[in-house]
Image (cartoon, rainbow over all chains, first blue to last red; front, side, top):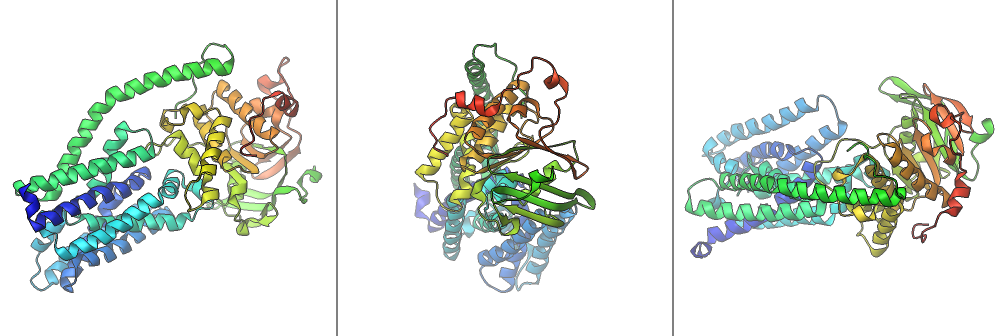
Length: 298
Length: 262
């Protein structure tokens, strides 16, 4: 493989693998909580961070991490208060963050909106050696959180009230989800881009849950899809001159459609098997009475 | 009537002069309610009578405006021993965004014991036992979205039982469950009562659970209007020929499974 001989491609492929793992790993919790749009919001807010990095001539990755974490914590606080005006507050945060980014980058020395472009849609040639260190450290944090605390985070996202009654530190875990999502956005921004990062958090999970029945299985399938599409997309943009984020997201949409098509016969087969099993159960439990129509479906 | 609400050393839940508001609307207007060890208490009332709010206050999900609340003799504010309580919330029809298997949901019931730690062998055994108790072991790998209302309720009960609680609090376990399903739930509950688990149930009507209930507390507009034996049955349960089997006698006849959780 000649493409592996280029140092920039080695870095890009490593970053792609890390994006493929981390984005679906945190995305599954956001999807479970029906907060799929949160990644998008953090991406918008992180633009201000990237621009601040240019302004102060520091690493845009670290600066974006700081700003994204602050933004994500703000979003979590708005969400947990459950105010009806929460929507408006989030809109202020999203678009304020995006406008702030564009404004600040133009204030920076030799900065222009053009500098932001590679951060918006991803680019395989921009993963600098310094970025790779940052991306690896941040990705390690994301994996440690999303896999190490998966039972606790699952409980919090699945039934927050029950998690609280179990004595779990729910507020802390919710903040941890927000911070981890923010960190994932900055891990993904070089390869997938800030405007498309949310797609990698949501689409692999959405595709996986078409065919899986459990949470752990969905997580594993989503990560497998994530790694496959981000590697394939990255390699594609080596040959085709286009932003890598666009290629990766289009591929994941294609995978989603393929899984949806494959799910139809699978669901039918499972429904038939479940119906047969239910009938057997009823007969055993009722001691020979005819199977009754089961109650309301949830 | 007053005698049933006096807290003693065996008092598991003690609520006195409890007031609570939802927004500006008073939902609990000074209620006294206590549950003693080994009792099966039904909290009855119409929609909006405050019965759900009362149990949600007990598990710390609704703040009391005034009055006192003790769990196992400890003021609720300082109560940390959540593993002693098994909570079965009102079943919502809103499905989660991501599928989860029956076993995954029930395993969450061990979190009060494992907290942030890993799942050990004892936890897996407890989950197996809880699945057995509700008769859902063969569905352990199925998605909870594929279950009927009654089966879903059994999963939520198993989740609460997985933590081996001393007190089981159930909010409207019969809502949206058909008659056959209600009988299955009554059987599960009968087994818990035989194990001397203390049970507090929020119910719309007694239904098939009636023979299990030791005491009923009826709420109306946020006030206790009855505290004593279950009120006279109405509807089909008052008809002649309706069985009134005493729970403890009945439970003795049942095969008691190996007491992994007790």
